[in-house]
View 1 (cartoon, rainbow, N blue to C red):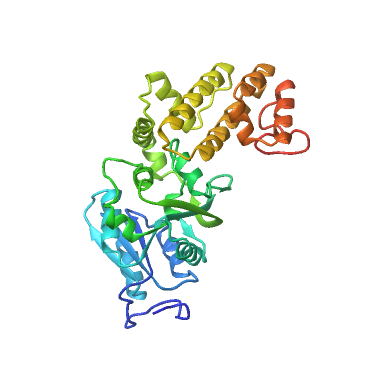
View 2 (cartoon, rainbow, N blue to C red):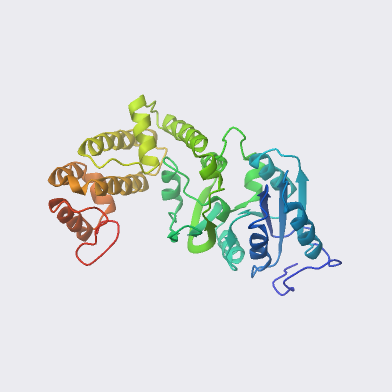
Length: 367
């Protein structure tokens, strides 16, 4: 039974759908500051046939009281309370409780746009080969905000996974059958990078997409996992990258592993030495992929070309030496920039302009 015409809130006494289309899973621990706003963004979705499963992972603040109130006000909200077990266990608990055809992820400090569920549901209904659907996001809470445009198509998304997650975890919606049938639950060994690990494992069973619409506002604040556990998250993410390199038949030596980590974390060095090492490493990745066929070749070259262009751009102050080094990798250089962008880059190198200096009346990646 569709609930498109239903009232916005299901009060006490209203029937709960036996099998809603969407199960939204939200894990929280001490989230009193932003939790009400996050839940409200789900309650105000334009699509109404959903359930919200909130797993309270041992909160000691006012989170339990907040959840007790909202689940009494809205029968679509189901709360599971457990002792402190960690995010991965909480997420897996939520998935096991889910009854919907689709599972939408949500975090206790973010805000879903009103049409998020409607847009992602329509996309997945229309594209049966896509098992996981993300979107673009807008960051907020820091000094500046920005729209993060994740790659749209499956090929680019899976190639990008060699370096970093290519979907915003709290903005994803995926088929519950994908997780259950292939036992793709979150892995507790992937500490603080559980989403990255899941996307890599899921890539062997399904296709991905990101709808090119901003469907989630992602809050930046000091208490985020990425801030509190940055070192452990980086360690786990690097292990995930090394495992993907193994699929390409590559066992990197320490210098190569360190370089790949630097590139993946956007820790570029503005030197021709770094450029040269990156070019050699990318050539090795291209040759390995040609032998193994792990990634689609055209998309793989495009993704590497985009990374290469950004590495080159950081070193424009090195002048003509950067320009020569960049063009020593013609396959990579051609795959990312238009002729106009090549011209702007060349002029910046020749005039030793800082990469983010406004130049030729424009500002952007290669301005």
